[in-house]
Length: 264
Image (cartoon, rainbow, N blue to C red; front, side, top):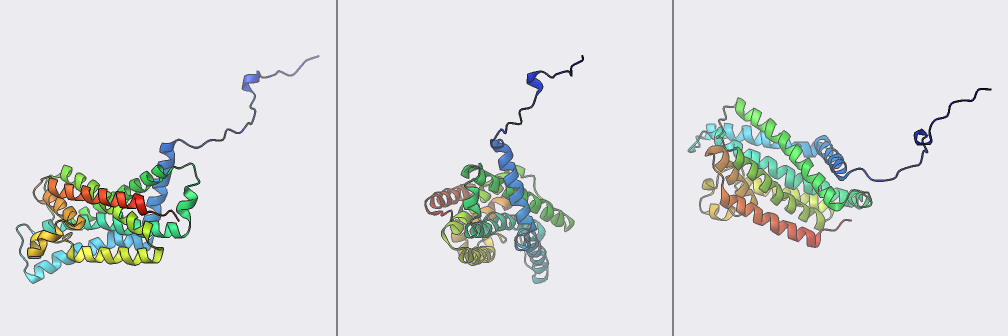
């Protein structure tokens, strides 16, 4: 009488569940992808991230030509670094503040706090998402500027340091606003601050265009970021003073956020 062959015990599946979280790197990347998709799918965020800076770039160049404004460099070379700085500010400050404010209102952050993703992982995911969106902004704005005759200096290191320091400073300030105000107040405050800094914060126009007021705005994060970008893309230099100003704002915003941020 024949018998059926049997498999060794080691080859037989037990179907025992193995609960556990995914590796931290995979969690962070998944969070970053989700954050970036949400930012780019949101019409208001996309408007702030890409459309408004492009409108400012084209309008500033065309307006300077018609008004006969003169600079030490061609208008497109002067305005493009400032518009790139404006794009960094729009994403790392305004978009982040508004998104975080409504995430607090609807309990999203509170629910994420109960997931295996740690708070530090959540913040790292947001930072990576900001970097991905800023990369898209830089590519799109640069391509448009190049078609308009932009000739940037070889200041890649200065640009990279300016973007990193600017993102850190404005992200800390954006989280400070979002973590201390209600969602509707955050929406109003973030947009108002954005408009004020865009028009009077020396981010698009160089500090020399503000006369004596330039000695004040150079210490604002907008002025420091704009000057750091212009130094890198106009002269190929690293503006250490402006980078230092941005790092001080990042430290102030980070400490204040850590003390006041409310998760719900």
